[in-house]
Length: 309
Image (tube, rainbow, N blue to C red; front, side, top):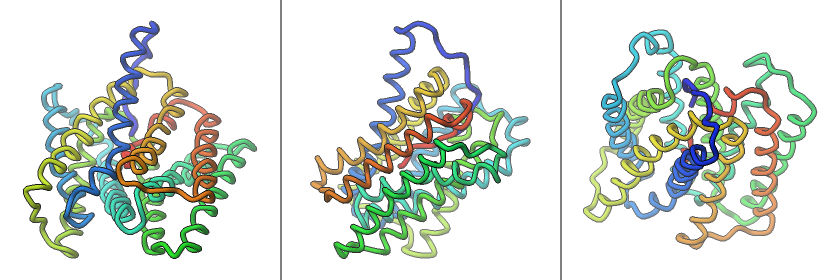
């Protein structure tokens, strides 16, 4: 998400603390799939509880820090609302892909979203597609072919694949709207968009599976995914994001998908085949190359995470 970026700190000691916050936030986001796997609710109901708890937590943090900038909100309300709608649908489809496919593959496919934005950047933002950028996009989509082919060959859920691709598309839409947000700070943007996402997910959930009725055993994990993985993680994410160099932010952001694959292997015992590992290397490697070649701080600092996730 875009925010009002401050001048990066100059001392290594000062930067180290903010690198630590940023990386910790990404690691927390990387556990979303593992935490969701412990909850008995439908995937959209999990997202509903996450957006409710996380939205309340982030709104409270913003209010404690001085409140929302109404002037900025008025000027960017359209993009904030559409970003929130995209975020809600993004999380619905991503968490659905976790259940229908698995966490590792869903996360990897989800991360083609930034490359879709890069591919369309000449039409969306008037940015030139250079040779290295085209190469990065091609590498990522070759990786997607490896993973998609292995899913089909192994008889895994094609519906799960469609959900994962849809999550990448909504992620791309979210990035586009967030790149347009220039005046509202990152944390305020996150709070507003998650609050809007809650309304979207509430409507979707009531029309599909109904209002959630969590078991007592679900409560600790719902609090973790709402308060820790959303409220705390986003606070750490933006406190680090505002201080760090843009290039470092772009490259370190891939701690999220790598940690998600690692945690799902460690705790959920998910295993990637050789073709899927090759696809993972292509997707993450190509995406990192694409981020490295992008011009300016705004593009690299307009990411959400990984939330994915």
